[in-house]
Length: 294
Ligand code: ADP
Image (cartoon, rainbow, N blue to C red; front, top):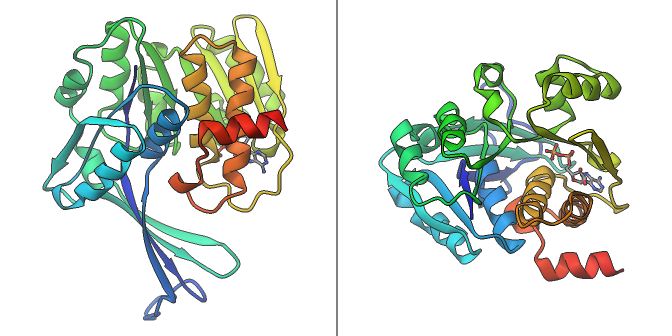
């Protein structure tokens, strides 16, 4: 199984003519409530890709419907606790040109403790993987406890923050970053120097750098595996990275060859960027198979 210690957010999406200005009261023309959060998105992508995924996280007790949504997608949510703290949420303004402005509140995602990590890692077996991002509390405990149990540890330090460098990164077996995160972690700005820095300082781990429409690069032992992105008409790149991670890790944790797993991740995320939204843009396995057969 893959145990994902991750955020669950409720995205409140307000369509507006323009971003609200200081002192202004602005009527929204349309409102939607959607399940979001990198953690939840990655769990959904993993489940749709066919992986056995257990989500460990926390939401407000009044938001149980969002937990049901995850369960319906195939995610084991026995580790999702209902709390009296408000759920993590994002207040998102979207303008007609598709630009957004976001206020994020961590809420219940920040209530994960070392104890909840311990409980989440009960009944694991050595072939299990642990996955986490940078949207919950107790990430250091996730990394170190998972390593102690000799599980495989995948880390996606998104969204990037200064605190990432303080984490026990030597516990990580697989680091998955986009270009911005790769630059922040290595302190380099050019791709060649970023790759060089990873080769020098991250020999303990495999590293995947996603490069948007330029595809993906994986550093694995002495090998550098590069896979191109698929050419598609992108309309909304939200959750591209989450979809990639879910589809890649589902295949890779199941012993699929690295290049093939990267290709599946790229295919699934290429489909996702042609669709609006986050969780609802993640394709099914059948859709990915059909896309790859074309
Ligand atoms: P993030 O969403 O985390 O910033 P990226 O933008 O690097 O991550 O996207 C993740 C993956 O999604 C890429 O490696 C690529 O395979 C796919 N992808 C992203 N944007 C496009 C695009 N415009 N066309 C095709 N594939 C894309």
